[in-house]
Length: 381
Image (cartoon, rainbow, N blue to C red; front, side, top):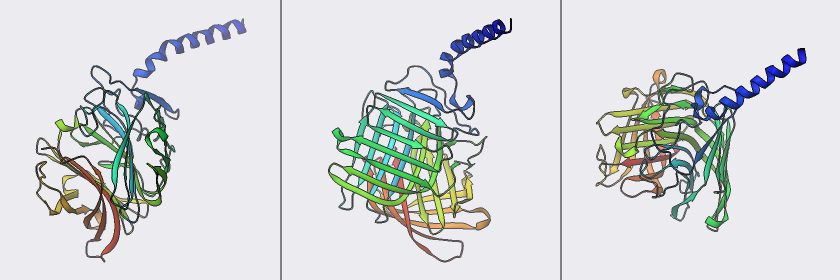
């Protein structure tokens, strides 16, 4: 009798699992059971119909997918960069799930799964290689993520505690192969505060942001079109997602990160098409968060030198640097000058990414020099 009850009970459980498991793919990843790695496959073709976006943080899934699917008006991507101490050599690898209809700085394609590899060399050469995949498989483990772009020879692997990431590219047909590792130096955060549950993750209109690695030691070993690239430098990793086309919400966008003295800093200063200014300020000192806020009074980023018009215009030129004022709470205020050193990516009049040097001081303290930065500017109007 006992064996019959055991058999019936287990047959019932098996039947129930077979019934609900196919439907589990429809459940947002942030409400699935904790402690179990979650796997999401993103097809190469855009979904039809509406999608659901998440802009409220949970206890986990910081670096995981935040959209239920990718359609022609949404985007989700994982971004990694590193710059050499020479300020001329840089590498940026972005794992996109998007079409150019939602993010117009991508090349036209019907494939949403694309890896962009942007590189610059000391001789002034810079370019980008795009590699398309047949699918993207993203696994989320606690707060870390790993991804494989099937058929592209491209992947990343992150630890569950966000302490280490490794990117691997093996695409001889595109002339590129190598590895890029990041070992964290600063705690993760969201636009308005630390990496805790209940945080607002919207950094601009309809645009989410999670910064898994505000500062890291990056180690690069790559071969790009026959040229060797190998160095250790200042590295960074974050992700963005949006449930509406980028160009429908953003007029201009200043973002950057860097290391200056004992400080690791990250800034966002965005002007929405509605005229509202959105900001996010972050600073850590020796591996501890000093300040993290999205209050309007916490940050000001303005162009300096060259064409320093603000807000910037897509018909205008580019600045030669930026001034940054950042509130550090009880520690005072940080004033930084960023000087552009080299172009890391060029998307035409509407987009530039640069490497830069930094100097600045906190309140009335000594001048800190020798800072290293990566920064970007979008101009859409």
